[in-house]
Structure formats: structure tokens, C-alpha cells
Amino acid sequence: MRTIEIYGTNIITEDRQLTREVTNLIVEIKHPELGYPIPGSGWNMEALEVYADQILDTNEKGFVYDYGSRLARGGQIHHAIRMLREEPTTRRAILSTRVLEKDMVEQHTPCLQIVEFLHRQGKLNMTCYFRSHDIKAAYPANIYGLYRLLESVTLLTEMEPGSITTISASAHYYME
Image (tube, rainbow, N blue to C red; front, side, top):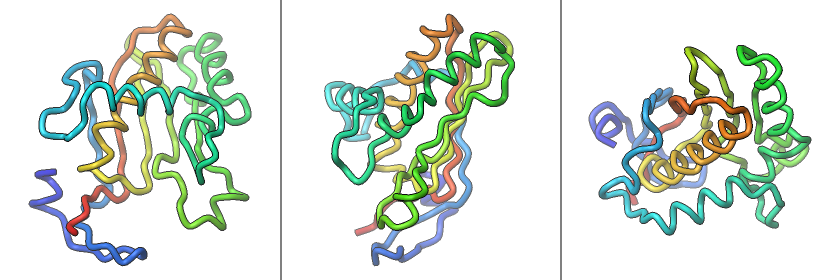
């Protein structure tokens, strides 16, 4: 938040909302298992658990999009786990939330686009690309949910969890 306050610029979005934004913000969280709920975020553990359960739930929920069903689409998660087990140094354990036939025409498309797993120096690290990232309202829940996904994959691959890095093309908060 502080980085956006200091270095951000005010942008009016295509939805006519005033935001303060920094582009291409990269954050590495070395110990994503610690510090929940984030003080001052407005999130409590019960709400974080509900959010994380939605990311881990692979069933479609009838919304325009949900991360869980999209990350599981086409067996992506199972394929990534198999790849990591067979070849731990793979650079191909990538999950995508994009469904082109839907996302090319829908007004609301997933903010989280790509999740990549890299096993390096004995730890399974996760890198996540967000096209748009509401740092104030969504970031705390996103990180917790992604940590729970990382934890789930590490259990199935018998790897040690590592860091989570987010790359946010538009890191912002709403000013109205």
C-alpha cells in the first residue's frame, strides 16, 4: 500500500473507477505461512479459510469465473504435480486461469492469470502473475489462498514449501 501511495499514479479505469496504481509490482513473500490474518487488512481467519477453500475447490460455482475450477481445468493441477514428481527441476509446471473462448468476450476476466511452480534449492516456490490486483481488498486473501494451494501441492509432491512471488501488472487500490 505504501509503495502505491508514494510511487503510484491516479488512473480512471474502463469501469470509470478512480484508482491509485503502480505497474509491474513484484513482491516476494519468503515465508507465506506466517502472519495471518494480516493486521489492518480487514480479513479474519474464518473469512480467509472460506476464500482459500474456494481456490482449492475444483468445481465450477456458476460465477463468471472462479480460480479453483479454472486452475483445475483440463487436469492442470494433477499434471503439474506429476511433472514435479517425475522431474523436480521442471520449468513447465504452470497453471493458467485463461479460458480464451470466455475471456475474450466477458467483461470480467480473472485477475490471477498464471501460477508457476519451481522446485529450487530444496523448496517448491510459486510465482503468480496478476493482470490486475486490488492490493487493499484482495491481496491478503489472494496470498493466503495461494499459500494453501502451495501447501496442497507440496504435500502431494513431498516437497518443502518455499516462497510466493506475485507479479502484478496493475497493482492498485480504489480511491472512491
